[in-house]
Structures are given as structure tokens and as C-alpha cells.
Amino acid sequence: MTEKRVDDGLMMNDGQQNRSERPGLAARLISEARKIVSFGLIGAVNGVVNYAVTVGLTLFVLARFGLATDDVALGVAKAAGWAVAVTNSYLLNTMITFAAESGRRLSWRTYGKFVASGTLGLTVEVLSFLVAVRYLPLTLAAIVPIGFAFVANFAMTRFVVFPNR
Image (tube, rainbow, N blue to C red):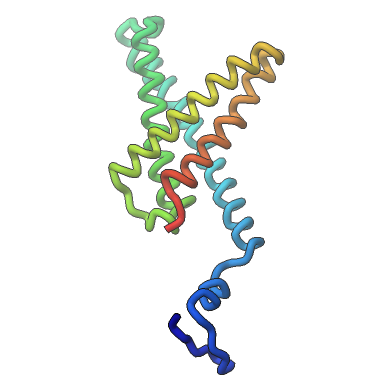
């Protein structure tokens, strides 16, 4: 053990020194709450981005080529909307929500993990919708999965994509 001298003249070993420098439980909970709110706000922004790209491509590209009712073309427009939104989400969450964990550095490896976690969130949302719609009216069944997907997305992003350093 290495001895460290502190201002009041007492000696502390490394374990004691490190514990005293860690933030308390309340500070950590507040920090995580801020991350959850930031993650949610960025998610809301990207819901609008997804919608805008999907509708924009459908109205301004597919409709001009007579493909606005073609299932494959609509699927491609929807996938493009999701891809733009998930990429924007990665950029914003790296630079804002998880800036401390990411060092504000973008990487293909982290982006791949982020996309995979988003895909897992989408899977959770679809599966929970299929269960909820059996027991709840459609109007509620469509809302419930959003909460499950949010929890899955945040947990995966926080603990797998951007774990503490």
C-alpha cells in the first residue's frame, strides 16, 4: 500500500483515498437522471427526424416516380428515416449525453454497438407491442412498448455502448 499525505496531516492508503474522491450516491443518481432526460430529449428529436425523412422521401421522391404506394419503396424510405435518425442519435448522444464516457470521440466500433443496441430496442418495442395489443386497446397498446423500448435502449447505450471508463 502506498501512503498519501492529506492536508490535515493524516495518512490514508490508496483504497481510502479513492473512496473519498468518488461521488456520493445522490450525485450519481442526479447524474444518471440527467443522462436519462438528455437521452429522452434526443430520442424525441430523432423521432421527428425519422418522421421528416420518411415522409419527405415519400412525398418528394417516391411520389414523383409513382412509387408512393409501393411496399418495397415505402420500406426503403422508412429504413432511410430510421438510419438517419439513429446516426443523428449516435452523434448527439456521443457529444452530449455520454460526453464524459465517450470523450466526445466518434468511432465506427461504437457506432456499430449503438446501431445494434437500437435494433435491440426496436425488437423489444415490436415484441412488447404484440403482447400488449392482446390485452389492451390499440391506443394504449401502441404507447406501452415505447416505455419498454426506451428502458432497453437507455440500458444498452449506458452500459454496453458507453460504459464508465
